[in-house]
Image 1: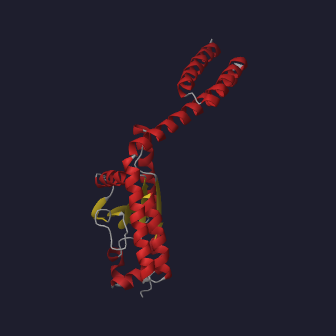
Image 2 (image 1 turned 30 degrees about the horizontal axis):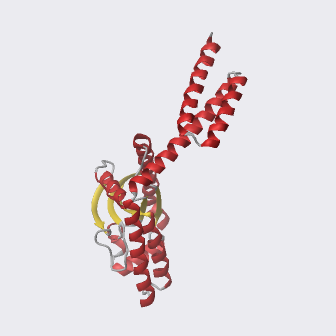
Image 3 (image 1 turned 45 degrees about the vertical axis):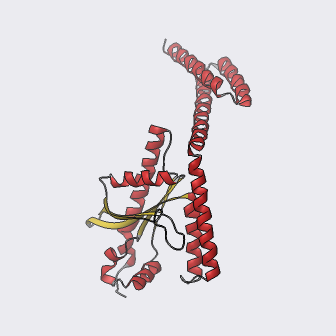
Length: 267
């Protein structure tokens, strides 16, 4: 083993992980705003532990002076999606980005591993601006569904316990579990439209409710106490009946009342 300062060595990878997490979370927020739906459910990231780097280098016969190119997942990003279809959309988005370079990709969904492992992997080269200048580091982006991630997390834990030598009965049961997880993804895809419509309805109702309550508070700010109290009573009734159409109408009425209050305050 060489005598490198591992804390210094890992700094660019830590920076890459943090920056990529921010960028993909920002992408999620933008798509949510533009289209009311984002293919990204959530994003996580990690830098490989030193012991894991050394173990992998030993397993793959990567020399210590070749670790930066020989170990491609020191920086790792994981993007979770609701549906299998979303995975390909996210992958398309990553391919088109100008702030990173795609090195290669592996489709373990179409060509899943013998263990049953499914995921979409993209190795990217990402430029990091360090105190010593620009440094390009490799990072692995894994894109998978929640079901795939649940299975992969369990498999990882078992492989760690058995040191990559799973007993035959455990391996068989894991393979069956992987198929069950994929069947779940397939079933969810078959009712994707219904799920998306339900989520949009929930999001729309949540936004209307937040808007109504915020605007009622603004009326209190303009000393329109009586109007605010009346609107609050109407809201309480409509909320009990879960009437989204009337809630939208209420929101418009409150906004008109706010407009009058603002004009009056300027007079």
